[in-house]
Structure formats: structure tokens, C-alpha cells
Amino acid sequence: MRSAAYTIYQKLLLVMHTKENPSDAEWADYCAFTAKNLPHFTSTIIVTEGGAPNTMQRGQLNDLLEANNFKQKVAVVTISRLARGIVTALSWYNPNIKAFSPTQIPAALDHVEFPRAHHEGVMKEIRALRQKLQLPLD
Image 1 (cartoon, one colour):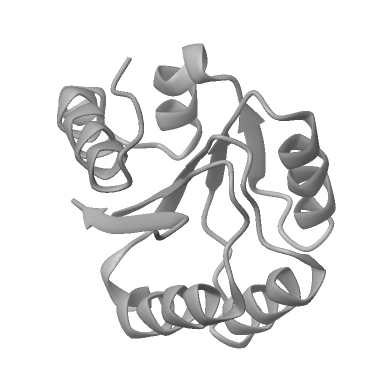
Image 2 (image 1 turned 90 degrees about the vertical axis):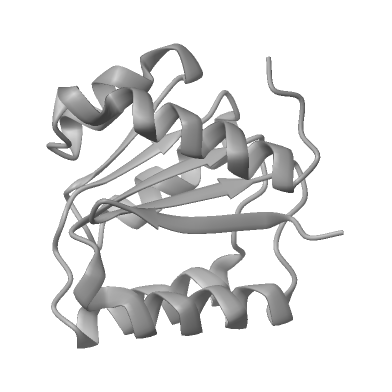
């Protein structure tokens, strides 16, 4: 079973993590997807049930983003304190990253400057990613 799923919706990279941390193989797939699609998205929303990359995996992503001068805004939506701590660590490299609670998804979308007229479409994509990972739809 995969611990993450992702897609691009109107120049927004959407990432969904389960409670499980990604394996190195899954993370390599995600980094390859990100590298291939960097020209196609301008910001990122990550929704996690608590799963998060480890220190080495975060370093790989930071290196990729830094090499491509990616400075766009990132929002992490989670209830996990551990994930919020990881967001703080990531913010040392990218001051445009910020954590939000699940009830603050509209604020997270505002943070990444995603048009309000398309918020419902993002919510549909999040539900589709949750379904792909067999997570409750709430």
C-alpha cells in the first residue's frame, strides 16, 4: 500500500500522505515526479495524516528545489505535531512554507495564492487522492 499520492491541479501540486512515512522508493518516485513537473506548478499543498519524509528524504527534496530555484509558497495541512515540527525544519530552507490545521484548508489555499473561485475543485482533488490511498473521506 502506498503512503502518498499526488497530482497537479491548475498549477498547484497537491500531495496527500497517510499516517505512514514514505519508503525510499516512494520518495524517489515523488522526487522524480516533482523534477519532471516543476515547470507545471507554482505552489504546493501537502495534506498529511501524519506521515512525512525522513531527514535524508527532506534533504533530497531541498536539494532538488534549491537546484531549480523553487521559492514558491507551500502549505502543509495536518493535525500531527511531528509533521508541524518538520514544517518548521523545512522553513529554514524555504521561508514560504507554513502549516495549517485540516479546518484551515481555505487559509492554506490563500497562503499559496490559489484563486478562491477554484477552491472547490481543489477539495474534489483532495477527496480523490484520499480515495486513492483508501483514507476516510470525512
